Structure formats: structure tokens, C-alpha cells
Length: 201
Image 1 (cartoon, rainbow, N blue to C red):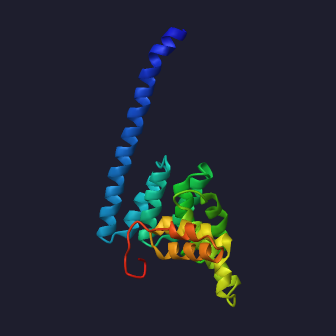
Image 2: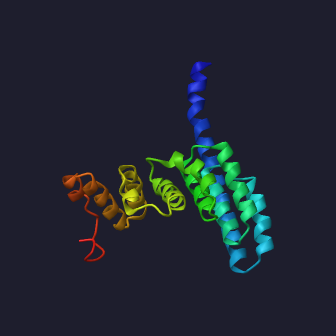
Image 3: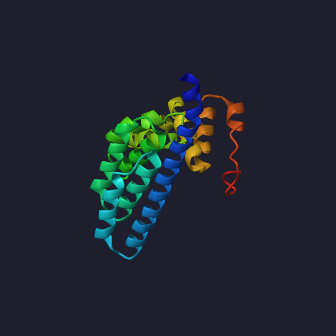
């Protein structure tokens, strides 16, 4: 029995792989249909097709693809609903967390976004967490002196913002934090990948 199982296992894995590829191909062609309907301004028909696609979504990217199209045509309620459904199935998926956090941030729902962005610390989407922290700090400390933003705890926030945006202004902020702490060598080591203007240099 064990021998028969070992012989049949590769065959079963092959069937499973073929099934997944067929599902992916089917979703891709259905997304193309939805995109065509949107480009022809047939929004109701596009929504109808997206509802069908919801039942076929099987991974984070298919859920995000559906969300993206709902969002494009201004269907925010089903867009949010599909992301929540996806996160229930995979609550630690970085891409889903990032997309939903961005959805909340664009609606100024900072507190709600924070519960998702904190899971993104140390990932390639950590800049979303930086955005939450800085926006909350701006609201809570509107009269704070400039020195408040030079505090050491903001260093990682600024650095994550740089990693996410590649905007060298965040590295300048990191350098200021280092200089305020007397860490001159650390400040000197913060060189952007490219200089965009003379101020950066």
C-alpha cells in the first residue's frame, strides 16, 4: 500500500498543479472581461461579473484583483468587504494587510489602519506604519516644537518611510535624528541611492 501511495503521489501533485494553473488562467480571462466592461462604461455588468469572481478567488492576488476593480469603479463597500473576507482567511498576509491599511488611510481612519499597519513593521510595507505614526503624531502634537520630531523613536519611522518611497527627504530626517544624538558617523553613512537635487547632496 505504501509503495502504491508513493507511486501515485507525484501523479496527484501533478493533477493539483494543473488544476491550480487552470483556475489561474480562468481568473485572468475573467478579469480581462471585467476590464473590458469597465473601459466600455458598463459598470453594472462589471459589478455582476465581479460578484461571480468573488466565489472563485483562491489566493491573496485574486482577492486583490477583485478589490482593485471594485475600487476603480467606486464600489467601495464591496471593495472593503472582499478585503475583509480575504483577511479572515489569511490574517497575516502582508499584501492584504498593506492594501487594506492603505484603503483605511485614504479615508483618514487612522486608528483602524494602525491595527493592521503594526503587523507590517519590518516588512517592505513598513512605510504604511510610518504614515500612521506620523499622521497621529501631527494630530496629537500640533503645537510641539521641532525637537519633538527629532526624538530617537522617530528614526525607524523615517527610515521605513524612505525604504517605502525612496524619497531622500526621509533620510535627511534620519540624519537630523543622528546629529541630535551626536551620532555623526551614523549621520554621514546615510547616503541615498541617488541624489535628486543639490540639497540632497
